Structures are given as C-alpha cells and as structure tokens.
Image 1: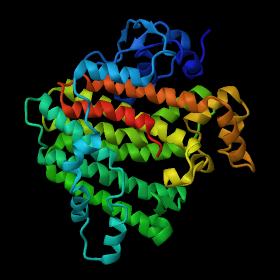
Image 2 (image 1 turned 120 degrees about the vertical axis):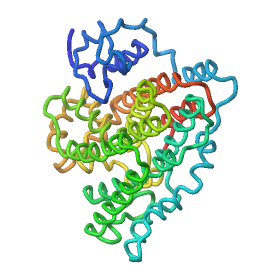
Image 3 (image 1 turned 30 degrees about the vertical axis):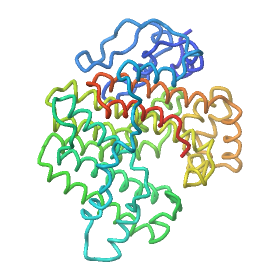
Image 4 (image 1 turned 180 degrees about the vertical axis):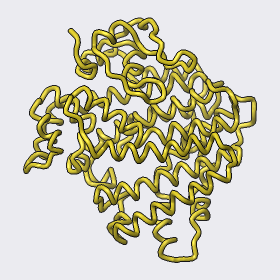
Length: 408
C-alpha cells in the first residue's frame, strides 16, 4: 500500500536496504525527495556524481535487527586498516591548537567592547567539531592526492572560517530565539542586548569574509558563500511549517541541511578544491560532510528530549518551547495524531509543550530519529571509504560513531 515514505520508517528499521533509505531520504546536492513507499521498494537513487538522479537496482535486503552500527563500523575499520583509528580530536589537535588565537587575531579591533563581544564565544571551550572535521578531511584529501598530509595555508584558513561562520550564526540564532544560555554561560544578547549581539554577529561574518577573500580562489569563495545563503534560507524555513505531514518531514530535513549540514559539507568541499581538481573527489568530501552534518543535528534533536540542561549547556525541551517540531515529534505524530494540531499552532496553547513532551517519550520517536541518524552516518562512512587509506580518513570514520554516541 502506497503512502508517505517516512510512515514506513518503523518497517524499514527492521527490514531495509543497505543504502536505499538514505538515498531516498536525501538526494545528491541536498535535494529532498518525496516518494511513495511502493516506489522505494522498486528503486533507490544513486549518489554517484556521474549519474545524478538515475535509478539503480535495489541492493539485497538485510535484516537490520541484527545489524548494529558498531558492528558495521568495526567491519569497515577492518576492511580499511589493521590499526585502531586514532581519536579524531587527538589527531587534529596540532592543527587546532592555535585556532582560537588565529580567530581572535582576525577579530582584532581597537574598540574594547566590540572586541570583548566578538571574543566571548572564542574562549577555547567550544567543541570545535566543524574545524576538526575540516582539518581531518583536508589531511585525508592531501594524502589521497599524493601529497604530504600537512595542511595548505588555505585549508587551515577554511577550518578557521568554518568556526567563525558557525559562531556568528549562533549569535544571531540566540537573538531570534530569545535564548539566554549558550555553551553553559549567558548569551551575548542576554549580556549586552539584542542590538549589540546582532552587530557582533555581523562583524564576525565580515571578518570571516575577509579571511575567505584572502585565500584567493574564486571557486572556494563561491562554495563557502553558499553556506551563508543556506543559513538564512534555513532560518526562514524554521519560521514556517507545513500542513501536509509528508511535506512537513521533507521540510524538516531540508531545513536541517541548510542550517547545520551545509556548513560542514561545503567546508569539506572547499578544502578538496584546493588540493584536487577531480569533481568526484569534491563530491566525496561534500557528501561526507552533508551526511555527518545531518546526523549530528538529528542527534542534537534527540538530546533535546533525553539530556538534562546541565549536559547540553542550554535548557532542555528548548525546541518545543520555540514552537519547533523536530524528528522525534514528527515520528511521534504517527502514533499520536493529537500532535498534528499542536505542531500547526507551534505548541502555543497552554500545556502543549508538556503534552507533546509526554507523547514523544511514550512513542518510538526518539528511537526512530536515532535510527535515521545512524543511516546517515553509514552513508558518510560509505563516502569517505572511497578515499585512500590514512589515519585521518579512519578518524573521520570513527567520528561518525562519536556523533551517534555523544550526550551533549
């Protein structure tokens, strides 16, 4: 019986193709797909850069009840390297050591207050996930391209720029959301007011743009400029909602790509452009970043329901309080149709947040969102495994496991 593809996720979680669900959920170049369940049984979409959008035969079905992510990660590791993959943070530490010092130099201004505002989040206490991924990807690509693993100056700059763009977006997000806590401390808008917070975010973006221009590669400038456009479009998408349930899930995944994954995907692609002219290699880097980025946000949406405020460094149930229906809520809506009306009014009526919270916890929405994140990570592994073996490539594989098991 045909129906919205996401309604079949529970069925797929126990009997599913190895890559078909991924590629049907999200096609090449981050274009979402809306298809019926019956069509998913007939074909999957190839993510290869040379045959974009062409249907390919459905792979052999496997039973995912007995296939854990850990086992697939272990087999992948054995296939590519006999040595245990190094910790991604440890492997990137040398290149990230001066990251925040370099950023503060880019933000140097004579006005003390503006300088303090801009330096506020660059205190070295952030996770620096994005620059870490960029550094590891750059090194893996350099080795793949028959170079030494050392970073090129432009690649190092892109790692720095990725963190600057990300932080600027957080400053602006906190103003839009009226947030009072970020990374375990008061937000800039809470400390200095919305006007100064907006200006601080703008200044960080302008400094990132200057650093980007100095790289001197027009293609890289175009790729990273797309990130800023996606951030703005994603924020507008978050302000809206969809009446149709199938459109709503597609809307959620596209918004997730634009607000979170685009930065990682395009930063990975940018460092590949500087070292390799092969479009296929650019696509591998992009697809890894895209899939890891979406998985990261899906897990973040789960943690909003499963972690306390102390772990997250921000209030829990924050998304519901902002009127946002994330993956766990959308999956829970299949079992509790009462959520539909709450989603459409953005949980604005008295008691909506508490009731929605309970519905999600009583449903398998958290489990299904975790499963979806795992599928994206498996696709990220498939992409990065196309590169030549290296410690950095294997660290990127290990990173996908860390994304799934993090608790903050």
